[in-house]
Image (cartoon, rainbow, N blue to C red; front, side, top):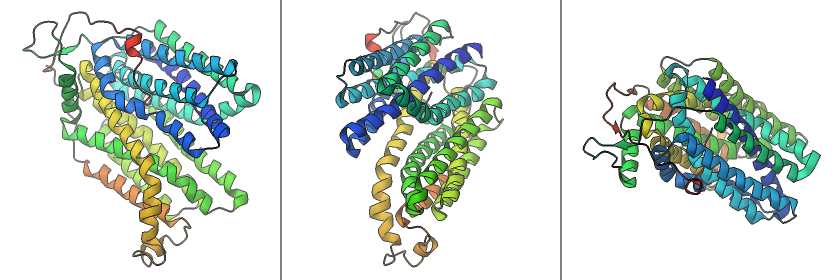
Length: 454
């Protein structure tokens, strides 16, 4: 675990720096423009480019050394942060420059996360992989909890330039840990037994092979479905909770209520992540995925049925408590079922699907709540006298109904796969590895991809 701990420390610092700068730059865009649309555009650019570039990134991760890919992607991201800092120091910072930096960092993260997830397979023993995945989730939880707080402190002490300097320093420290660490690489790039020595599969063939591995087993398809739906539910719940808190709370208590719900969710995520980091993991990870998914669905359902600040805070804590369990257990199953030399493609494709769930959750939550659910449960709507009465305590009945439906759907999706199993790799893997040295990736060729969790 020593090598993993070194790399993990670097990822933690980088995630904190990115969390601080992301919060501060989003706030800066809104203060400069006063436009919610431009603010939302920055959020969209934070993951949409990387999601689209994920398939190409996965192929490159499998074709080249994972450490080299990480070094190149981190270097590219740091250079963009340096450019943004220089623009601020010279007084030429503009919104379009923040957008451009966000796009580049999104693309870089598409390389970083598949490469790191695939590299962990060789860094830690199988029985420690659940703990490693949970520690990664802990780093994300720390960035989520501490990022806004530290950003506020830095903005008050030195303004935006202090935030940007800290971001550059965090990237530099992350790069230093990669330079120090030496972790195992897969034996070579994949080829079929009928290929000549050194012959490489084409891009389409490699992506098709990665897609077949990702969905080849019913258990893996179920995992992909669960994590995608869970990400969508998280995005939808995040978008819907704020209106529910504000609609059911007096104006004088709204700030405290929002803070209570937000902090409860962060504490649930942190508690679950730390608990899974200390524990070596369950013997039946797929059963734990099912249980945690159902629990999260019930929490979302309860939030819709009782949209009061205290109940919403309890639901947020419970929902986010289950996320690290699903994340770490699912990662253990994927690492056991996917050959190391194919994990870059498989994990990148998985990331593309799961981030697609997040994107759909953000895009559909508002329109579905206001244009579909609200008319249904209005006093004169078709469900006004039945479901509407059940949700009668909620002023924003559309959001409450959508939360209930989201929770039910999440629980059903979790239960549908309770009988599935995930088969680990057999001793003799059908994919043969080319033992010839792989071509190293250049710094220029690594500058195009996104960010997923650590």
